[in-house]
Image (cartoon, rainbow, N blue to C red):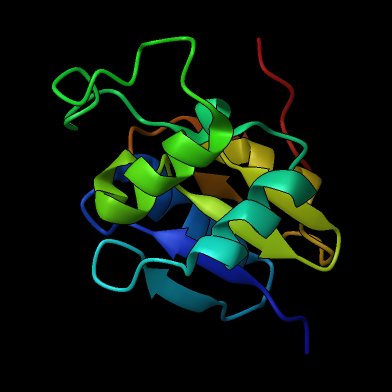
Length: 143
């Protein structure tokens, strides 16, 4: 059984699409609603590193206290940004997915296909109707 973890926000359409794509590969992932159960600081740092990102790359601006906290200040260190994400988990962009093939911020949702070890088991369309996987389980290239 493949072990996959998704740091998920059920109110986010992209996050719901990623969760559905993981399930379409035949895997039931560990779902962590990170707004209720944020990752520990050390785990968050590890996931940022494994994803090849910086803390700033993972920061979410829209619908968060980003501006109020002055997080646009380029002089802030990664440690300071991680501290802000730990204090305000809504600042963590989503969905963040951990698989045996890597860690990735899956925006847009079809980027999760790059790190899923198992093939898609059938067609898949995002909530907006965009078809991204065909009936044979193959990724449909963007137009």
